[in-house]
Image (cartoon, rainbow, N blue to C red; front, top):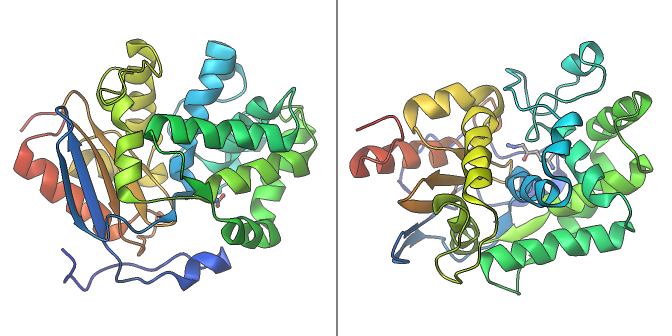
Length: 295
Ligand code: DON
C-alpha cells in the first residue's frame, strides 16, 4: 500500500496541514480480543480533524440526550463538508453532526454553561478516557493555523447564530471547535478510541460502558450515512463500514462486533477524504469479509 503512487492531495487550506509528509501511511486494526495488527507509521501522531466529531457527538448526546437532534439533523447532505447552501433553506439547522456546520452546532451544545477552556478540557479528557491514554494532546500550532484562516467556518457559525442555533459567542464556539479538530493522535490511539463503537458501547479493554448499546448503534449509523460527506455513498459501496474521515488524512472505521480500524494517509480525494486510506480499507474489508452488507 505504501508504494502506491495515487495518493491524492494533502489539505492546504489549513496551512499547518500542508507541511505533512504525503508519503506517510499507517494502519492499525484491533479485533474483539484486543489483538493489535499495526503497519507503517502507526505510532506517528497526525491531526485527527473531523474524526473528533464522532467523539464530540458522543459527548453531546451524553450531556443532552436526544434533545441534541433539535439542533442538528441526521441526514446525509450530499454537499461538501464546508458547504453553506442548505443552511438558508433549513433555517440554520445543519443536516448532520459531521459536516462543519453540524459539528460547530454540537460544539456549541458542549460549550453551553461552561467556559471555553473547561469545554475543551472536557472534550480532551473524554478522548483520553475512550482511548485509555492520558498522553493525547492538542497540537496548538494546527489550532492556531486554522483559527487564522477559518473564514468559512466563521461564516457558517455566524449564519447559524443569526437563526439562534448557536447560543454562545461565535468566537468561543469556534475556538473550541478548532482546538478539538487539532487533537493529534496516532493510528494506534485512534483504533483504541473507537473500540466502544465496535463493541456495543463498551470498551473491552477497560470494561467501561462509554454509551448504551443503542447509542453506539446509532452513532455508527450516522457514521455510515454521513461520515464521508458527499463521499459517504462511495465509502459504503466500496468499504461497507461506518467510517469517519478527517482532512488530516485519517479514517476511523468500525466493523461492528469485530474490529476498530484506524488508517492514515494524508493525500485526499475530491471530497476531502483520505484517498489511499479508503483503498486500504476496501482491501482489508474485502479480505476479512467485514462489510456490514455481506461478503
Ligand atoms: O473545519 C474544518 O474545515 C476542519 N477543521 C475539519 C474538516 C475535516 O476534517 C473534513 N474532513 N474530511
